[in-house]
Image 1 (cartoon, rainbow, N blue to C red):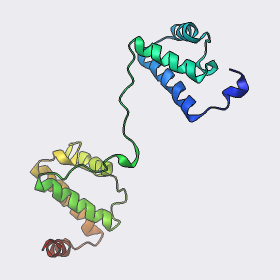
Image 2 (cartoon, rainbow, N blue to C red; image 1 turned 90 degrees about the vertical axis):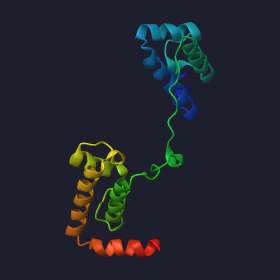
Image 3 (cartoon, rainbow, N blue to C red; image 1 turned 135 degrees about the vertical axis):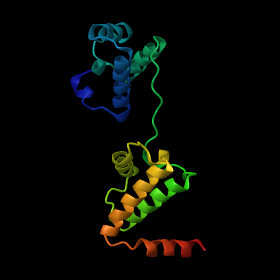
Length: 166
């Protein structure tokens, strides 16, 4: 492939090149073995010099030799943002208090990972869903203290929540 044509890569071509290089890494091929494979299949010693059809042939050969692509990870908005509600009331209370702090702008980072990091620092447990009742009580009280320092009247918040449930 001429150098001028090589510079005009399409997303599909970049994907093929990436797959070839991922396969090379996964298979643990050293440079000489990799280039010998490319030369045997296409006659070129560099993946950049191979047309798209040749890259597909290389990938087929790598699969024949045992390489299996890893399962694709789901990305984007199709991914579930939150897990299903916990069956444990003490864990739901942790998320409720944390949610109130987020709604009022006191907790600046809205990601679940920020709560997980807070829980990890407090209890050593990696995920809020795994808290025991006594650990959750510590976390709830710490979150409430943060809210109280910011001016939240928790009795009023709980009364409002009771009215909304009716």
